[in-house]
Image (cartoon, rainbow, N blue to C red; front, side, top):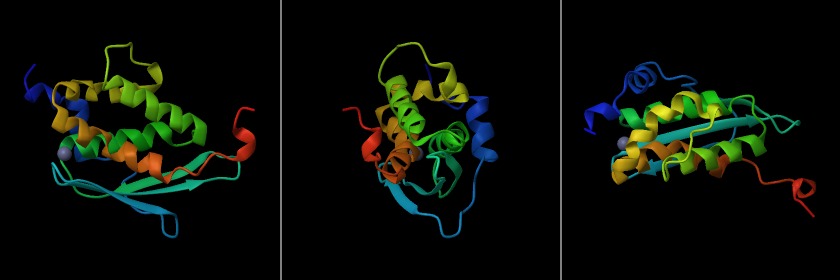
Length: 146
Ligand code: ZN
């Protein structure tokens, strides 16, 4: 597999026209960087009283992989609960680590699977997801089993 085939059409599409690109004034913000590539992201999130992600937006600079991953990530987690978002983070990370079947709910994110063969690029693909993980509110005590 060549590096070129990493840049599938769906990735270039999200790179050129990222979804949920912008800011949410007043919402919590986290800044994350991937120094090995120079990618940067500012991610903002609004979680409702029902623990659902009401809005999520990002800005930043970076390569096609990091930006497309951020765009697709915001698309897939918008409207999900915090717990569902955590589950999606785990599934995405699994997708980049092994050959297990890709869950349908990851949708277009499947296009990023090719980065597995390029460890430096994995950091690009996971940057937005690390930001999301850091920004999600902690579990409420009654959500813990036991
Ligand atoms: Zn990058």
